[in-house]
Image: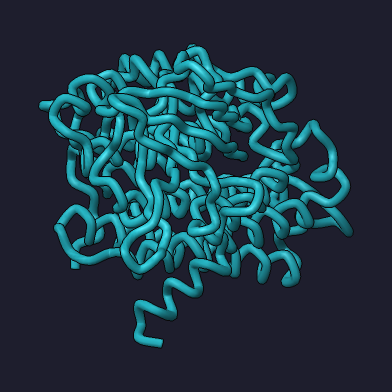
Length: 382
């Protein structure tokens, strides 16, 4: 087993580390305090060919591969979670869906601008009464001549209201099959579509610079050709794309946990109590040892899932495992890192407070960890 990154993968990882240190970190505190969406950062990422790392070159991407993406994502997420999460939503559910299920015309019209970073990708599934229970969605699409007419609402949708947003892919019901079961289909809705309203941004505990909004569809009309994939297979399509997103969330979690660990280790070496650095106390040493161990395990399962995908092998099980373990590691490490900082960690002056706030939602997004355990149980034969 070879655990080394290739030269190309290391180059991407190093570039993202430098970009995070020089471009993201100096501005992240301001973004998170004001809630400003960092448009300029994503334009710079586009210039570095980062907005299409999972997309083939023929559609404007760099086709770096999943392992390289995970390595890059870890570095970006150490710079700022809001940037990392926005990038994740764009690259995975916002772009890969076109690659997997789009027609050639749709790929040229929508995927190419996404891969080049000229537009920002988004996907809308969640509704007030449907999230973990994806089959509970009520948004409906009805074919009327050469147009689909959509009615319903979505909530907690990322990347739709930014200056770079082109619109969103949504999941809607399109009637019932012969057995009386709901049919689900995916649609591309441009932001200027008639009857489409983008709601105001949510005020969140963390991820303050992430654009998250409610979407309203009132007799929204889109062209017949904006159906993505086959009618009635939208839910199946979404679940397939979500596996890639789970690997990405795992990588974001590893990045957050690694950054929190580094902050805690440094603080424990500098903070002196009872005449010695607190890292010399066994209670702190054990915390740091457990943190380092959980991070390394999280990193390994995340890279394994990425490697499986790159080698066209089944990876849904490992993706669910990685997302679950890594996100819970991020929460635990952030909490312990804040504890090591003591009262300082509970102030806005210290970065660990932001990491602590940002960590919890990682166990919720891209499928809650309760759902992940259901997925894992099913895939191991339960």
